[in-house]
Length: 108
Image (cartoon, rainbow, N blue to C red; front, side):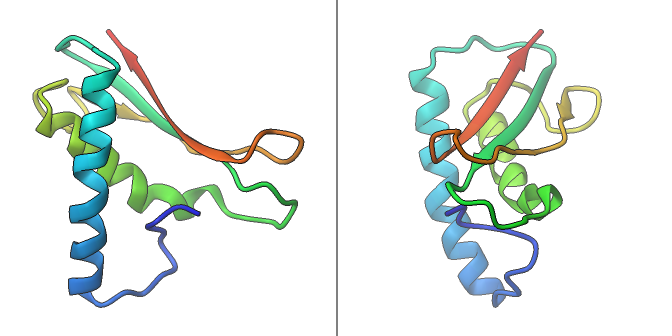
C-alpha cells in the first residue's frame, strides 16, 4: 500500500515521519539504478493494488512529491520545478497486473 496519499489527513508530525522514512529509500533506489545527472526528467508512478476496487490516480500525488524531492536530493536533477521536471499523471493498473508500486523516470 502506498505510504502517502491525499486523503490520509495525517497530523503534520506523522506525515513528516513517513516522508523521512520514504525519501531516503527512494534515493537509494535511484542511486542503485545508476542514472546520471541530467537537465530534465519526467517522473510518474504506476500502482497495481492487486484488487479491483476503484481508486483515484490523483490520490498518489503526495507520494510522487516525495519521490521527486528524492531525485533532487541524490542530484539526478537540479530542481523539481517545471523547467527541470515533468510530473506525469499517475496510473493505476487493475489485475492481472502484478501487485506493486513503480516509479518511472525518463531522463533527457
